[in-house]
Image 1 (cartoon, rainbow, N blue to C red):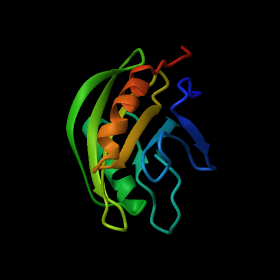
Image 2: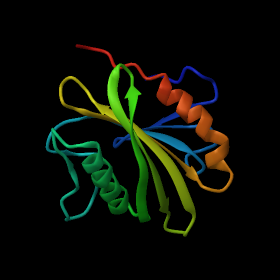
Image 3: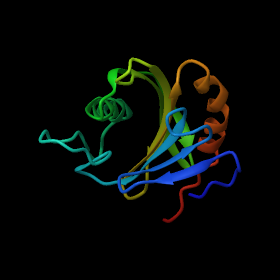
Image 4: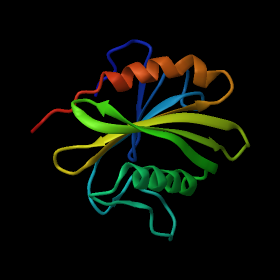
Length: 154
């Protein structure tokens, strides 16, 4: 994907692509794309094996594995809620809300939306921002971005 709206800036690392409006510490959309059976949502350091995506997972299992992934990244008191079916591109997908605290105790809120594509790969986007101020101001743009997703290739 390319940012089509001038409000988004793109930042890519060796691990992941992120888009932001106000800066990466203030809000971001993280892209977890083409996750195949038996692979982690994101590569994590450390000796402990990372949580893995498994083909055939139900949305509840994906949300729980995602919570485990964020916890392994260092987020505290991670929880999800409001899991519901939604369209993601042309696929039937799912959406859930995320809440967690960073290492400084700042509360973050997020929305994750994704689907399993026709090759059984997980495609997932996460919008996250501090609960105070930035979440409310940037979430409409993130939801519009989610709504604009088109999955290609069949």
